[in-house]
Amino acid sequence: MTDTTRPLAAQARDILLSLGIAADRIAGGPLRVVSPVDGSLLAEAATVSAGEARERIGRAHDAFLEWRSIPAPRRGELVRLLGEELRRHKDALGRLVSLEVGKSPSEGLGEVQEMIDICDFAVGLSRQLYGLVIQSERAEHKLTEQWHPVGVVGVISAFNFPVAVWCWNAALAFVCGDAVVWKPSEKTPLTALAVQALFERAASTFGGVPAGLSTLLVGGRDVGEILVDDPRVPVVSATGSTRMGREVGERLARRFARPILELGGNNASIVTPSADLDLTLRAVAFGAMGTAGQRCTTLRRLIVHESVRGALVSRLIGVYETISVGDPLTSDALVGPLIDEAAFTGMARALDAARAVGGKVHGGERVNVNGPGSFYVRPALVEMPGQVGPVIEETFAPILYVLTYRTLDEAIALQNGVPQGLSSSIFATDIREIERFLSARGSDCGIANVNMGPSGAEIGGAFGGEKETGGGRESGSDAWKAYMRRQTNAINYGRTLPLAQGVKFNV
Ligand code: UN1
View 1 (cartoon, protein in one colour):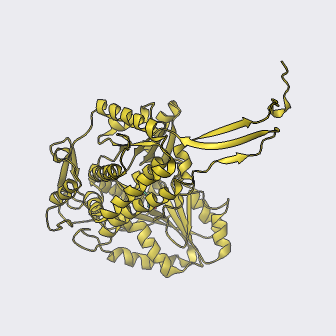
View 2: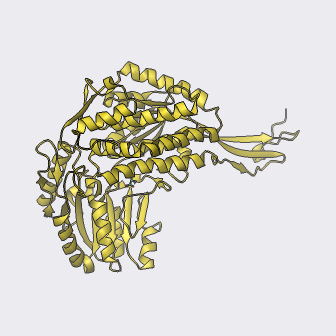
View 3: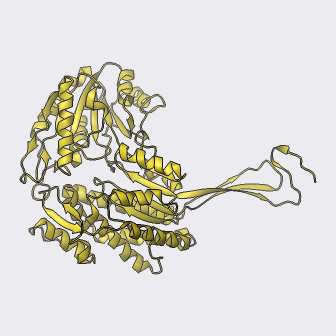
């Protein structure tokens, strides 16, 4: 168990060294890793050079060439062992997530649980990478469709889910027969080092895993670009801002590589007259303020029917005024720190922009918890005159804009009237309103929930969204197909050669 009375850097170091990470990987390197909890320096991580990055991608490619021939259920065994390591080290890794990202202990552990869940899912999947048998139009012919490993999968992950999102991608990629090269956020290399160490433990228990099957590239943007541009990487899964994703997507398109993009969200909930307001209040609180508003799926817009607006907003203001903001490691505060000063500046700028167009801001001020090096805020509730100004942008901070509607059509138009399309939800007990929201004319998002907020998805469903969210799908359902290549086979088992579409070609 980690000694939680030690300074944060010592705790992080204890965890990393106990997992077998060499001390020189986390000291004296060029990448300064700061804890958002108190602004203290956690480590100075080593980074890879451009040459090393290319060499590691090459090794990952070699590993793929071997791994693709291992039977998929056997590949699943490696992922099962990874899940075992994650179970065994759940407390330590969860703690490291809290140290590096500032999540509450419960959310840090929840992130590791999400990894375990996707490992379990992938193990089952390793026996279910089903193809198809298709009826042929020709006599004594058969059409089949099968799925093959695709190659090296590049994963570029964001700070807010520093390890779970890697696992969504990697657990599927490994059972699909691919190698994985991971470029974690520059803000969170320590959790990435820890996960890579756990993978290596699983690999050594498995025995005979080709070297380089899972490869970590700690570094900056330049390293990310090398990964995105390398022709040996046919699939790149990137999570982050729309600006980053547009660049990645364009670069991948130039070389016809496959993108899996999970970019900005600007998620809304519609609160209808039939909503259960007690449940709505609790769901809105978690959706908008959980993880200090730093989830892709965070609730950012509340679209409330005029008949319930007064009652709901006054209760919400009460919750916003009293919600506990504090050190996630030493208190049981529900709202921890923002990741850094830039996040705080972005929040302040959005609130100014909201005021400038007539928004009424409740909360949003900085709270001094652990001195000037860390950035804690009281979450902001902003009553807006309409969907204008900063409301159509994603600000990665706990700001909830409140809008009012009269008809459900109007509410859905507001919900869909932003460039992003990740997640959405409706609070209602009227089945017509619920089904209308879920219908083809309803929410345009990749995720549409009922009587819960837009965040906190389970791994079993496909995760991702439309429009500027990037269109990628990760995690459950049939998201695995993006990590394989599809092959159509036409097989003639007769002695004649009938041509498709009845074409004649007699030589
Ligand atoms: C993200 O914020 O990038 O649905 C992922 C959720 C989490 C994952 C969020 N399971 O909120």
